[in-house]
Image (cartoon, rainbow over all chains, first blue to last red):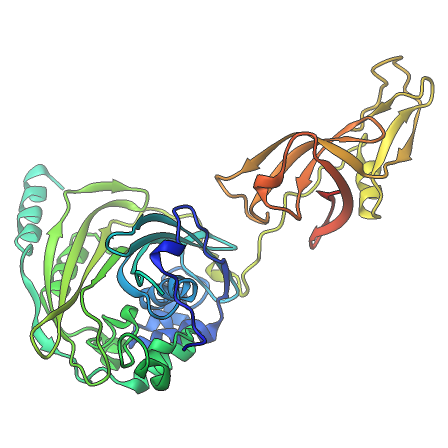
Length: 143
Length: 318
């Protein structure tokens, strides 16, 4: 038995909304997220390098955004879900001081193959859309 | 650039399509629990499939896995990137764009597909090619070309574990609006300031104090809102006001979706509310799901501070 529950395909319907998440964009998250994903581009840890590109501060790297998007999906689905794909379009940068709100909903359920598609939108409170895309999960057929 | 120059440049860049950026190369470190734990801690991801060995042992997988979004992490170049990337077909292509004025760079899309999960001890082998380059496009950033790299990931058994398509726009930077670089701190946008003129400042001043007033004609007692100098019934310009109880009923409503206006909380419901006193007021409905709002719904208003400078009535289901 497990304290963690994983949704089954039968429990999911098109239109189901995922619980929204507010992510505080801190310097710690931006810099440490870049290092945890081995992304040593200076714009993600050196403010002067980021300012030279016209931004006010260091900004989140793509791999951290990808991580937040999969976390958003699997926090909802539970740990036995298998992530099949992650497709995202990048928008405005996430810079320390912002709050990114993530919302999403189920767009397709393929009960036969246990596949669920989720649309995800991450918007920050200053510049708007940071990322928009979809996550595909394989869910257990029955509990 | 003449048409011939353009053609010569495009011949040069399109020659990169299909070129290898890196041959199949094993990551310097195997998939390992240390890097996974760092990643999970920082991303705030408590998924036990990544870090809880006891749980994972009894799960369908029987062991922990690496977060799928770490697919590209294992083969990252590392700290050397701070002093520039080692030359390869991609850096040569980027240099060629830069030489022709396409100095702007913007990652626009990334798509990863995962075919097989990996666990500590597995080796991730990555190969990358330049998959395609678009025709010249006009974008809001300036004219440019999109190029896409295709990375293919295999494990130590030669099985394909995933792919990544990464699309980058190389563009000629256009004059951009002054960047926010000079600002030390980010300013969170607030709502549009209420317009206070000769005829309505008194109404907003009362709102700041938590009272919603309704203008009343001193001559014929007719109530009116929004504030204006003359009574529409008797043309008297003499008036006083009464305070509303903010009991009301929804006459009509709409949900604002797009474009989102900075400083406002979404979902954003705007409604015309008929107050018990008889006048109408335009305001927001809060405290319920947008789908619950309906014509005829009884609502109760509360004057609240909605941002650092703004007091407004907000209506809740009664």
